Length: 244
Image: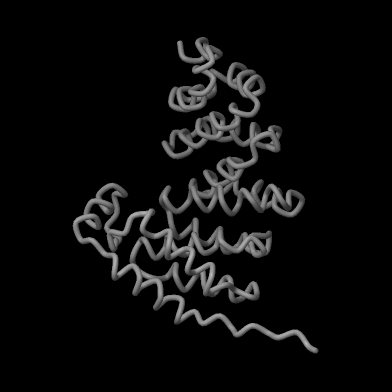
């Protein structure tokens, strides 16, 4: 008996489902608060993350892609919608189906970052998707991340740093530290913050290695980066000389 093919993913039904569910949960007061917090004029439904989780599970159970084309079409169909929660759903959808979180999807993730241009989009894409691809396919992904580290768009450069967030002891410290040093001179807040953030997270797995790096590069790292990067080390009394 031949293999039964699954029906093609209906992206219109996917979009309709997301819009209907978010519309039913909409809260005008929260929408105003959420937009103010994110400093954006993009409209919100006012549906916070806990209330979006059941919808994400519904997408997983009822709208799974069966090909790379379907995966990308579904992500972009949601991404192109006007409300911010719809774009969050696009990112959530992209992360749901691990079989498609591969080097083939990196151009899609890069597009979302370039178009998103704000931390609530960029950070989850960088950590959850690019980070997974880099960890699982280092030979194919590393040259792309290397290119990101020199990109003119600081959100792409930030992504090159934050792609290491989930790696813990598997972090390629050689590459990570090289990116941190390369960007250490930058005055952009979101770069300085990202360097500190990734150093802080990596210090939870390799405190001595991070401490050594920060001491050797103290004069190059911004005060913001030093404060952020030393937070975990300071809890263990290891960073007094970095914060004086």
